[in-house]
Every structure is written in C-alpha cells, then in structure tokens.
Image (cartoon, rainbow, N blue to C red; front, side, top):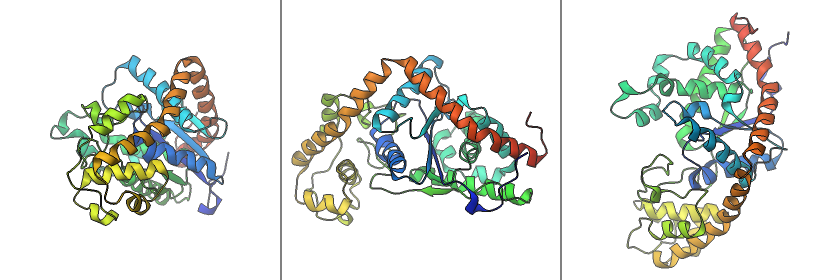
Length: 345
C-alpha cells in the first residue's frame, strides 16, 4: 500500500490540461491553449499530460460517429501544433476510467452552493436550465478529477476556466481537511500570454466558439488559406484607424480582438503590435493579418490532413497515451478510495 503524500513540496511538477473534441479546433483553441501546451512541454521541468475530454463533450448530446472522428481530428490538431506524444502524454479521457471513478468521490465532496456559483453552467444552460443534463451541472467536479487524478500542480487555462480550477482547489482542500491528509495538491492555474481569450470575428464581446452557429465567427484549424483570408476580410471592425497604444482600444472590442490575434501569431506583446500598426486602416491591416494567419496555420492544417488520413495511427497514439496516463492515475485514485474507506478493487 502506498503512503499518502504529506507535503506539497513532494508533488511532482506536473501539467494537466484538456480540450473538448466536439466541433473541431479553432484559432482560439490554438492561441489560448494548445500553443501554451507546447510551450510548457518545451520549457522542461514539468511532466506534461494533455487530454481530449470526450466525457465532458457528452454533457450535451453528440452524434456518436462524429464524436469519435472529432476526437481523432483534435488529436491530430494537437500533434500538428507541436504536442509531441514522445515527450507529452496525449490521450482521450474516456480511455482512462480513473477520471470517472474519482469524479464520484468529488461529487460527494463538492457542495451544491459551490456548483451553483459556476458561471459556465449558467452560460451554457441558458434560460432553460431545468432541461440541462446533470452531467453539465457536475462538469466542474469531473474537471477536478481530471486534474487531481494526476496530482497535477499546474493547469494552463483560459480566463473562462479559472473558476473551475479554483473549485478544484476547494475540492482538494476539503478532501484533505475531511480526511486529515495532504493527499491532493493545491493546483495552480496558469493564465498567461497575449491571447488567452480569443473573441468571435463577428462579435468582439463573445468568445470564439466552435458552438457558434456562424462558421464566419471563427477560424478553424482545418480552414484552408482562401477560407482564412475570406473570414478575416469579412471580420467585423469599425471605421477608425488603429491607435498607438492598447489602452486606446478600450471600447473597440472587434479592433482589440484582431490586434490581439496579430500580436499572438507574431509572438509580440500588444504594445509592440500597436507600435507597428499605429495609424493603419483596417483595409491595410486585414491583409497583413490574413497573410500572417495563413503562414502560421497552413503547416498545421497540412499536417492534420496527413495525420487524419491514418486514423489507425492516431488510435494507436491515444491508446499508448492512455496506458501511460493510467500508470500515473491508477495508484493515485486507488489511494484516494482507500482514504475514503472504499475498496479500489
């Protein structure tokens, strides 16, 4: 029987994060998440674990055949963007039963009051919350299990997921307190970079989303060069020229979003981008942005196409990643069951 971890300093520095595979990957996923996943892989000093959270996807109905294909496509997107299965663990959530096993314990640790404060449920459920699935309501407890099944110490997330990581910390703290242990770490959210929140090309007040009914609202990682250029050309803007500072973009959400994308794709800060772009009209700026986007994204969708032409190889990569993930998660979840007084089998 393994002994419980007693000091947070004893936890391996481990990164965990994931993306739902439903609906395809967007530029928002790439800039807000995957690019940072690759960065943390390259930085060193961390074990990096990345997951396609297909169990989260079915909190709303999914076509089964499409979900399976979308999971492979998302895996291809991760790999094509630089997530290396030889250096990071890459798998889909449903292959590792420890996620669901730990989630039930966390369902019993989390308080209803905590869940009722989760803004993402309110946003996704809308006015007809009574018709939403129980899974959508309990989503944050499963997310906590995703993270803590690996004793992850760092989770790169966008601003919209920060509340869920804070809930993960609350669940870990309550578990540790209730069972008089220091078994789970206090996971740190990692929110950094220029484009942690990429907005819709049609409405700068809304996040770029694969669930938006308008395909013109987003750039998909599978879009070809002509489609990318067309979407940027038709992106909503305003008649004013670009100012010299980021502060002057206040009240201009569409302009800020496009400059934000430009800065992130070019590896610059917003202030550096504004210095370069000051005084330009959108008729000048949009072609520059389109050219940059195509330059950065074309190699990704080309490689994604190559990878998705061999679904068996993607399945092999995900199966191997799941085996590696279970090697870490299984003893952690087994010990959690023992702490609670359950038999882990």
